[in-house]
Amino acid sequence: MVALRERKKQRTRQALVRAALRLFQDKGYEKTTVAEIAAEADVSTRTFFSYFASKEDVVLYDAPQRMEEVMALIHTRGPEEPAGDLLRRIVQSSLEHARAEDDFDDVVEPQVRLALIMSVPALQARALQVLFDNQLRLAWALHEAYPDELDLVSCTAAVGSVVGAVKLTAVASLTRGDSPEQVREALPRAVDISIRGLRHLAGPAAE
Image 1 (cartoon, rainbow, N blue to C red):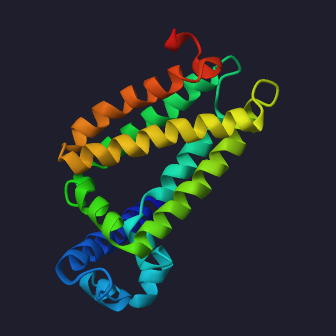
Image 2 (spheres, rainbow, N blue to C red; image 1 turned 180 degrees about the vertical axis):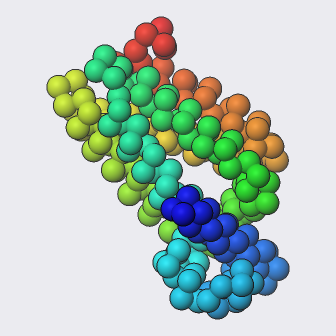
């Protein structure tokens, strides 16, 4: 019964995201209301707000779950695992998560979301806020995971470098028109280049 409820919630969530992105493309972000999104997804406005706090959060629908998965990975790091290897594992896990949602992402194309975020000031502001908050949270978690090896400055520099490399590579690739698979293939290389520049974090894999 629990699994059935979770599947139903997932379907409703996906329906809301699909409806919102369709309306944003057809009518424009500013002219689309929450009530219209809910009606398009065949749910009530109240149901919309039980899944998302705002229109901005619909576009960034996967950010909270992915961040929780990242935090869980940090808490499972091996006692001898270098920080660089842990960061690689985090990125790889995110890529596997994206592949697991391929059926959904085929409808919610990354280029569609990118175009919205790049063209709508409210979405730009919200995306930057989420990115900054998540990077800060990740830096603190990395510092707590390696308290005797890495000070806070090392952790903030590492997180800023790796996350920046991933985000900028993804945006540049999508802007060029690369497919989602091409983007996923480019990201591990971006991470390796970033970590090799942080030699004290690199670990054996970067030698």
